[in-house]
Image (cartoon, rainbow, N blue to C red):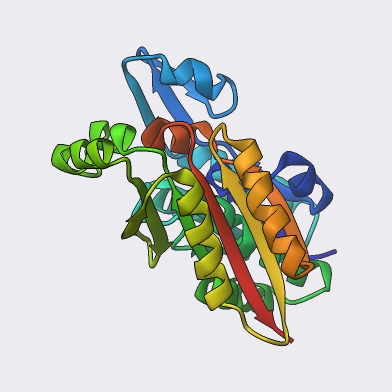
Length: 276
């Protein structure tokens, strides 16, 4: 038996990878025209055409059910890893669900999202697979949180303006100047970086930040992320592999909850250098 791992679908963890690592994924929720649907039940392209889409985290009962299900197969405990609490109510929901489930459960706010969250989840799952204790699995996750980076770009700010996450004047200026906004997500917040002249330049800038962060003698764990821009994500991962072969590498699609806020075309890179 091993410590069980639970996360939410904001992690953009490929289903095959979650299944192979025995990671339970609790879906986020959306409300479309007043009707609640689970993330993944409606294609993102259909949601983007809807005028009124709201997003929310899973209710506590779904985390309670996931924890209880995993606890039945192990006496070593359960670790739940969620999207940043600054972005969603998911962490609070997971805490309530874990409390209702009872037993040895740790709930961890990863302070990040998407592929960066996935890398933290995988670090915890790898520790659990090695037979680590509940304390050590939690420690592995917290070390990964301190190491992980996520830098992304979007073709324009239109969706972020509509969601209220950036002012309209910023979106107007970006369109007029042909700029591709760049963001780094850390400490639970998106921090704007100097924009690039177009998406191609933005991809180069993302790679430049990854190179500057390189830690010699460390293993690389990397995820290329996208929102309906898989070719761009594959391009980023191919460029990384030309320079180093990662210990972990995958292309992850942003969930529909994230795409509703960012719009299509987002592409980014999440990475973690693990000292040996």
